[in-house]
Amino acid sequence: MMRAWILPMLLVVCGSFVATAQVFKGNPGAAAALLLVFVLLAGVNSPLIFPRSIGALEAQRRSAVDGRPVVFWRSGCKYCLRLRFRLGRSARQLYWVDIWRDPAGAAVVRAANDGNETVPTVVVAGQSHVNPDPEWVRERLFPPA
Image (cartoon, rainbow, N blue to C red; front, top):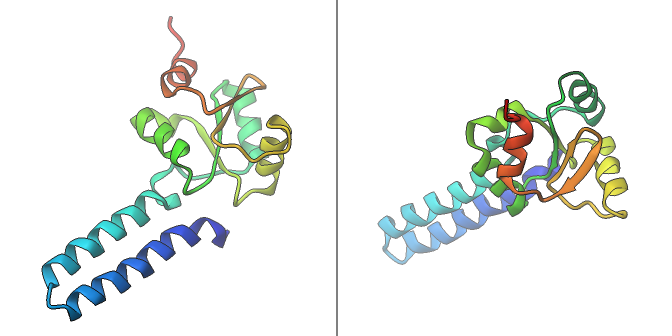
C-alpha cells in the first residue's frame, strides 16, 4: 500500500530540499515556485488523481455484469497518466485496479503479459489489451448505437 506513495513523497522531500537551498541563497520567490512544481509533480504521480481503486476480483465481477472495461494501473506510470488524462470524465466509468495495492490484480497483469507487470492493461470482455489508445477505450465504454 505504501509503495504507491514512494515517488510522490520523494518528490515532496526533494522539492523541500531544493526550496530550502533557494531560501538560503536569498531567492524566496524561486523557492516557492520550485516547491509548487515539485508538489504538483507529486500530485500527478500519486494515486489521488485516479478514480478509487477496487480489487481485481470485484472489478472482474462488476465488468461481467455491465461490460465496462477494467483498467489495471500503478502510480508513477506515465502511460497510465496518459490514459487517465485523455479519458477525462469518462475515466470514472471504468473499473480501476491498482496492481501495487492488489496482489490479485498484479497476478492478472502478469498472466496477460508473459510474467511482466506492464500497465496500463485494459481488460474488455475477457480480452487483455496493453497500453491501448484512449480513444479505443472510450469506444469500448460507449459503443456506437
